[in-house]
Amino acid sequence: MNLELGHPWNVTPEQAREIQQQLRTQVVSADELGPVRFVAGIDVAFEDDNSVARAAVAVLRFPELELCESAVVRHPADFPYIPSLLSFREAPAALEALRTLRRLPDLLLCDGQGLAHPCRFGLACHIGLLSQTPSIGVAKTRLTGVHELVPAERGSWRPLLDDGEVVGAALRTAGGVKPIFVSIGHRISLATAIEYVLRCAPRYRLPETTRWAHRIASEIR
Image (cartoon, rainbow, N blue to C red):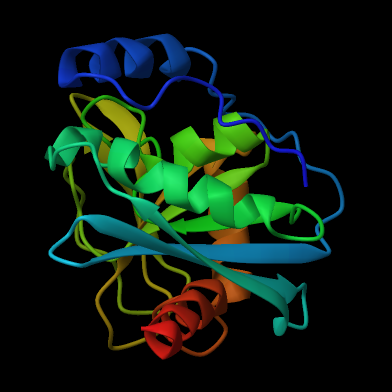
């Protein structure tokens, strides 16, 4: 698959912030996705004393949520660990993993933040924009913003607000579990992102896309 990496990666933190500021203006927060037949989960972890990023991609048929393709790629993690710039450590490996697939999925669910990021440009925005694929950030923990108490019923959600701006949603995917944090990545609205996350998480707290990507990465490790 021919997938361009988009911009230089061997940059300083200052240059990385400039790239963030340039690219964030290109994020599309409206629905620009066609029929969704394949969804993918992306998980990035680190090994060799955090010097190597290991990206796992799991592609599932939708709505059946059956695994049909997967890929794991290791890539040097040369960029320093800076919380607001994590995508510069993780995205190169994730994009390389996407390049090895037979075809791009119709929708990406990234284990991380999208718009719910201090710079409004998390991993899901970065990968979605560079791959020109609709994408969603699905995070287990909150990075920024505040929200009201989410009712206990599955499907309940409350807006995640940062400086008065809605940057995502705290979403209850199952009764009796902590909410997860959903935000747009690229070419999708928040309402549609919530809908797809719920459809991809029919039984557990985390979507099947994330669960499969975790599983594949753990087996390879």
